[in-house]
Image 1: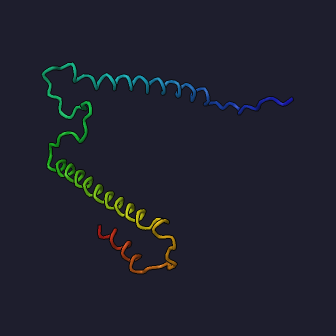
Image 2: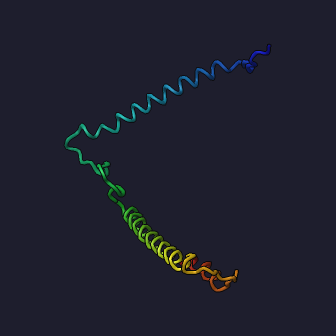
Image 3: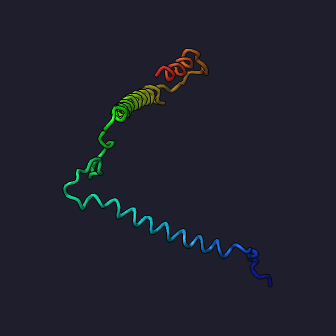
Length: 128
């Protein structure tokens, strides 16, 4: 009957096990300290709390520099642009689904290439 084959022990294996054990405990202790440090502001009543998370809050912390204000503007503008593009694509999909379904178009066209459309859908995203 064959037994299990265990890898051979090397001279540094015991030390590695010890380091892993200590490393795990040190990580846990650090997490506990970091968690209590974040609550330190709550004990001081006269301290202004700027940028503290609030329930149902959304957005960045208040901007202090001009660069941060520009980043906030850029973030909000990109949201508007992405929303507009998404709504446009959704409208196009709805139009295609309604106009070219099997009921309204039982015999599909037989052409395979349309150079104008291919150039358009390549150039328009580049311009956007």
